View: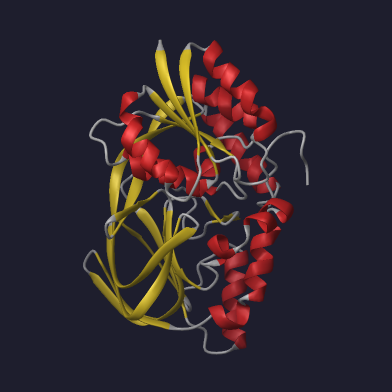
Length: 323
């Protein structure tokens, strides 16, 4: 009998996994799996369990938000032999699930674990840590992990916008730094920056490239220069909303390795969670480092992505729950 480790964050998103928990486990058992369930009890718990026990199973399934997936992936990366990962998204924005074409419908996502195909995705290395899809600094990047879980559960993606507006006066500040990648070095003051491998960030569609590949060994890097006045800020916000790169205020590149040198300790966010404060950061791409199960049919994956976009980031966790 095949063995499955099911790691679930029952508090993620709007707790929508709870009513379907037993049915999903029954689905896995009916498919021939011996299922071991672990519900996360604290931060980093999922990572520790994946690292210590994941190698004993044929498949590791995680349910939660992008942060839970990040923990599971980070834990499994410590193993030489890594089982594939099934993902049942249950967070507030589910950015990486959208990138993979995994439905936010609990039953459909669970079925995908059983019927989908393993797909080897790139993973980021941030100094000595790993991240699944984004490392970011600057304006609004602390909104996700500083937003209270209860507010996320109640308001969904709107919670991020509320917290962002509350922090507007203090978050848009200059960060003087040097950024080195490939054969290029740039020095400037930036209000925001991200290195990402996702079609959306915080529920909003990424900008800079239309066809993003999750397995090509490259990240998409966007740096937003510090606006000098309210008019430049308005131009920047307009470009972001229109998903365009305004080269007057933005710098975009595709990178496999990049170094950041900042004059002061800079706060970073990794996959929506606090990444710590650093003056120097090195980010590199581990190409096709881990397998995550996604729908086999390309048309099905595209349909799921369009459904996410139609909901503008306020994604329901099940067909029975519509905002």
